[in-house]
Length: 128
Image (tube, rainbow, N blue to C red; front, side, top):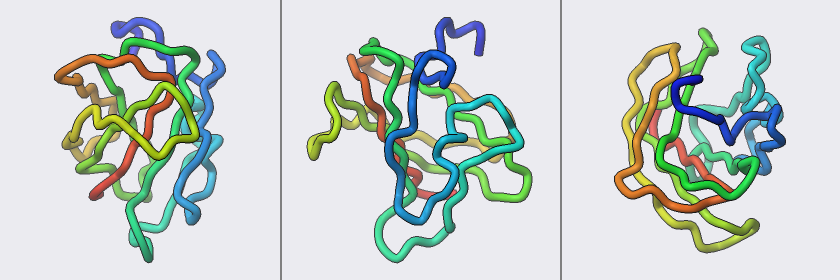
């Protein structure tokens, strides 16, 4: 992660996981480096998909998303969508991209086709 510069989604810089699907637990662990604590959600929801809203440390020019899944006893994200916005709460999200993650326990980088300004990111996990 150090090669990408500042991690504007780092808990230590003041970023927060603001909201998630109702069935999920442990959202406060999402941005922390402690791999013994984690966000967990049922694989199948009655309605919708798994999602989380993250408040970045400041308004930034988003060009790369880094995703890491390190819990050995759960599935890893596969297809996911990233949305961005300057304000939250909102009903209007800008789609930043659709991505495909590999089933690995390492950090993965995903470059946006067109970088955008954002303060809030919403990740929607479409499959795992």
